Structure formats: structure tokens, C-alpha cells
Length: 640
Image 1 (cartoon, rainbow, N blue to C red):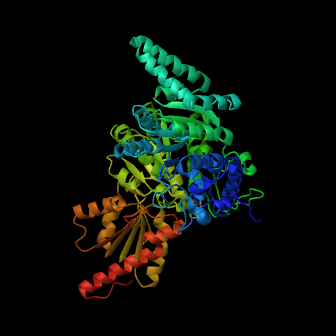
Image 2: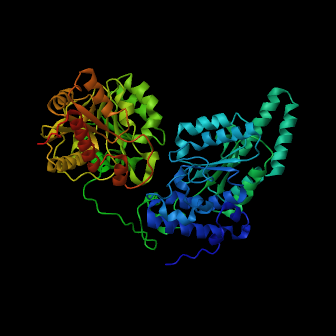
Image 3: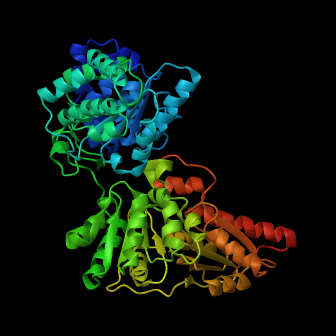
């Protein structure tokens, strides 16, 4: 089916959009919505949030002078329509693909992306920084931060608003309210009031009233200011934001151009300095029936049929790690009423939605507030409960101070289930779980585990539940398991003990977590080349299985460690032990970990290839190390 977009075809950049007559902007928005649907049907990605801001995107680029006026999208997965309007339409069907457009805003991709926002709640802080920088440089522009209502659950947003309210900088925050329903019903009266309260005459009258109030004694001045503020708060619902120093406008219908355009113009042209907050109510999935009717509004989709909305999902060969964790935790909680689950606005992404169905009273979604989630879990642990904080690797980074101060120092038995550890494919560098091993292994008395497959994840979930004297964490990748047989009952693992899967004499491969399958494949290839290979699964990054490491070091010529994490993690722990115990004298050591760079989106297999962490890279590392050792001694590489 050919897509007809005659008006959109004339818009290559926002400067073209600003030439379009206002009476035709809704038609343009309709075409933009269709183009967005068709593009995502080819690539998959985040659809619902982008469909909800189509009219808002058109209105913002029409009213404001982007890119001189800075436009920040928070979270960046709302930005697909924005990308189409800012010179990237010809590449929009490369979204989230290798060599293609990022699924989020990205500074290196376009001057129209002034700030990369793949994680939530950063826009107001970044926008205020830009606004203050403009003031210092004497630049007359406007900074606009579009932030979703979900992102407003994070403390960082309020920290930024508190700071912004105390400044006189030109910052416009657009609160995109598409889920929380914090607004009263939006209608003609609300739109009229918002237009009135953002207009020049009203603002001028307000400034005059302020001047007049200053002439009264201080108590009367304060009373007058409060009266005006609460009068507006009563009709608009914006008292909270007014208290934080913002001039509140709204709520307004985010799908109605006749409401959006005059209000945005009033805000743009306002002579009053200081921050504005425009409350816009939108609908996720707007304009595409399958998305509107879906429970998640097609928040994240695989490729799909545009007509029916049916998604083309590959049939899994094995259960997902996320699903295995959720199911295992649920079964453990069936027998232990002290187990509770905590998530930071990602119940389905972490498997906690499965737990919630069986134990809703013991499930806690705290919103996009990882810092709070960690300390909330710590508080529950002090009262004898067994909290599992299920948080993505890159999201847990936000709560690291709390992990250290509120959990580790107090040695509280909080269990961290760390999803999305390692490469994550289409979500690229912003969601790649590279650093959790490094930032957790350095903490005293922390137990850090990594399952090699889905069966091991079952055992490690149960092991974490049994650890009641210190904090623990287990990290696992995104996607499917490797297809091993699942245990009928979980096993409580001995803390700090690994396992040997294959015995050899020359080369030892010590794998942690997800690299074990490739380590075994590499061992097969090395065996075919005549090398005798041991393969071991460390299971624990901390505490280390020092007996196993000692045995591998003493009985082999080459020791390779493999992990899907950054420098400073498992390999550093092993190397430190080897050096302190003088085990490297007759041993060649080769640590394998992620390269010192951020890798762009591609398939996970491709990312592992780039990183040099797949089976072929393990073979290459082993052969090169053995040949180098042989060249030093003058002997041929040792063979089986």
C-alpha cells in the first residue's frame, strides 16, 4: 500500500514547516502519524509514545525557531516524529538497525538533538543548563523540555524544577501527560482559560499587579501574590508547579492545533522571564486503532502489519531470562511470605508483572525512581523482609550511591536482580549493561553472581533468597536463554563456588555468565586444532572461587577469562588474586571483556563480534597467546 503524504513531502526541515499555513498543520500531523506508523512497522521500536506527540511535535517546530531554540525530548523514545521533521525522513526506516538512526535523541546524529535522552527525567536539568548558558553568553533563545508524566515521578525532575524556579532563565517545560491522568477533563473552557492566562494582556496585568503589590506593606504584598497564585491554581490545577516557581499554563488538549498553537505562541512571546510549565494532555497510540486498543498502547513493538496491527515476533527457542526470573521468584514467594518484589516503573520489562499476578500485595512499583527503590528495599530488609529489587543494569547506575550507602555499608540483605546485563541490541549504548560487575564487585561483603544459562538463573534466584546476612546481586542478559533443560526444583548454590564443565591440560577458559556457551564452542574448535582445553563456569564474580582459580593457574599454560562487562570487573578480580599469590610466573593470562568504547546499536551477535567476545574471538585469543608464548621459548605451541 503506497503512502500518500503530499504535504509532508514538502517538509524537509522545520524551516519548511514554519512556512506551512496553520490551517494545514492538522493535515500535516495526520500524514506524519501515518509515516511514523509505516516506518516503525518495518523496524519495530517505540511507537505509542511517538504517536501521542505528533500534533505537539508539529506545533513546537512550527512555533519555535529550532534548532536555535533548543528542543529536548524526555524520554527520547517520543522522538520518531521529530526525527522525520528534522531532515532524517530518508533514513527513518533504519531506526534501531545497525548503521541506522538511534531509537533515541542523539547529539552526534543531528543539530536538532541538543541532548541525548535515552534514560528518563534528565530534560529539565539539561534544559536549565542550556538556558543559563544562553544567559551567560547573551544569546536570546528559548529552551523547551518535553517531559512525560512518567518521567515526572523521578526525583531528579523535581530537583531541577526547584533550581529552575529560583532562576530568571528562559525555560519552557512541556509536561506531556499521557498516562497519569493528573489533569481534570480537558475541554473548551480549560483551553480558553489557558490561552487567557498565557496571553500578553494577562501577563502584563500580572506584572502591574506585582508592581502595585510591592507598594503595600509586606504582609499585604504576600497575601496578594498568594491570592493570584491560588486563583489560577484553582482553575488550572497547577498550584504545585506554581509553588516551585513556574508559571503554569494548562491543561490543554495536545491533539488540538487550535489550542496548542496560540498557547505556545503566547509562551514564546511572553516578556515575563523565568520558567514556564505548559501542561499538555495527550493519548499514547493516538490515531492508530491497534495501538489505542492495546493495553500498553504499543509502547514497544516488533515489526508489524500496518493494517491489522499483528506483530511479527519470532517464535522463541527457549524461555526468556526475564520470564524465568519472574516465574522463579513467584514460586519462591508461594512458599515464603517474606519475599517482596520492587521495580522502578518496569514491571513487564523485569518480569515482576508475573510476580504481581500471584502476589499483588507484595509487589511495589515505585515509579521511575531507582534511588528511592534501592533505599525502600533497604528499609524493608531492616524489618526482616526479603526484597528483590529488579532493575536494569543501566538503570541501577542511578541508584549507586544508595547501593553503597544505604545497603552495602549497613550490610542489608537486599537482592538485586539485574536485567539487561551485557549487550542489548537495538537499544544501543545507552542501555548496554556494561558496568554493573565493576561497580558492584568493589563493594565489601557483596555477593555477585552471573548465570550462564536459564537453569542457572533459577538456582541463583533461589540462592539470593537464601542469603540473609549481606547484599547480593545476580546479572543476566536480555533475550532468550540457551535452551538447556530446566530444573524441577531450584538448588541453593554454595557461595563462591564455580564448576568445571570440561577438563583439559593446556588452555583454561574461565567464563562468567553469558559467555559460557561461546566458551564451549571455542573449546570445540581449539580441540579440533589439537589443543587440550578446560572450560569452567565461575558462577560468582564475588566472592571468587579461589580454589578453582588456583587449580586452573597451576595446571595450565594459558588462562583466559571471559565476561560480558567492562574493564574493572571479573577479570580484574581474578588478575588481582593471581598477582597477589604469585601464580603468573609460568602462566599466560588473557582477560577478555568489553572494549573501552560505547558501541552503537546492532544485533547482540554483531555487538559481541565487534567487542571480540564471541567464540571466534576466544579461539583467536587462545591461538595468538599460545603462538606468542611458543615464540618466546622456541617451542611449538603445546597440543593435546
